[in-house]
Amino acid sequence: MSDLKTDLVHIVRLAATEQTEDVRLYAARMVRRYRSVEPDLALQLEQCLKSSPARGQSPLRRAEAPFSAAPLPVDEDSRLSLLKSFEIDAKAEEPLLPPELRLTLLQLVEERKRIRELGAKGLQPTRSAILVGPPGVGKTMTARWLASRMRLPLYALDLTAVMSSFLGRSGGNLRAALDFAKRQSCVLLLDEIDAVAKRRSDESDVGELKRLVTVMLQEVEQWPSSGLLLAATNHPELIDPALWRRFDLVVNFPMPEPHAVWKAVRRFLGEDSERFEAWQDILVKAFTGVSFSDIEREINRFRRALVLTTTAPKDLVAELVRRRAEELDSTSRIDWAVDLARADLLSQRAVSEITGVSRDTIRKHLKSEASEEGVTKTGKVAAV
Image: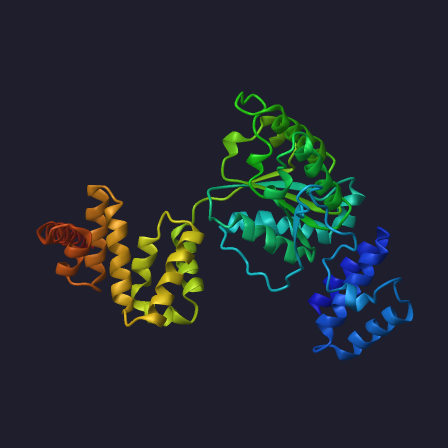
């Protein structure tokens, strides 16, 4: 029922903006989506489409194409598409986000659902947002998830096609891509926006790149409320200051916190999660300060090794711990070794071999901790 309501709102929005062909395409998608779960509804929709066929191809055939009836813009010389298109994915996986960040993003979805209430107060929904954070923390995944929650198609700017080798062509390509997206009800992602919106005070850049910044300033400010413009960057310091003021919202993505790392480990292990059950706390410790994409890459390596070799989960974890220990300074490495020994999953000898911290040092720290704990307990008893 929730999906039906969302589809109804979306198709009315398209109809209200007189996007007739997009209404037909969306209805055709509904036929396919509901054919197995709501066959009567699917049949009625299909009959409606057939009773008033579009010129040229039938709606059901055209529904196999990208959401917009118009062809994607291309570079005149290479004929490469300036945009990558993604169909609406109702099953897009939710990114692992801190609670406050998740609430901020969900408000963008809620604004689209209550656009009439906002309009009654003279307000528009958020039209643009820039996602800021290090690589691999979920910015691109968040764009796909937001598009799925809004039930809007997603387009992403293809920088390799936009940045033409011909002087003056890149600005035209960028404007053509943005103009196309502005005519759709869609989410547009400008990934690595720092590549086309560098500070104009940067003397190393040619005039062509500075013209791209001017195009961006104009387009972001005039973006329609029928869609959502998302930009993403790993290098906020490179972006022209004037552009920051044009975005309605700045969203900062931190490195994963321990609880998010634990969830990521569980998610990426999938059906192999039980085999690593005893090692998950150690994995969380090992992946602290690591991006989601790096965690996924490492865990996928684990899972491939389990399929192709006789390597045990314990050995895979030990090898990871050894590599992580090599990256730590002396004090952090000792703390790391003591944590591993305290977990009691590996012998002190094994911990020493893996981390390079002597067994005597490990014992000394464990004994010191035990003594401090004993003093604390004694003090509590005396107080009672």
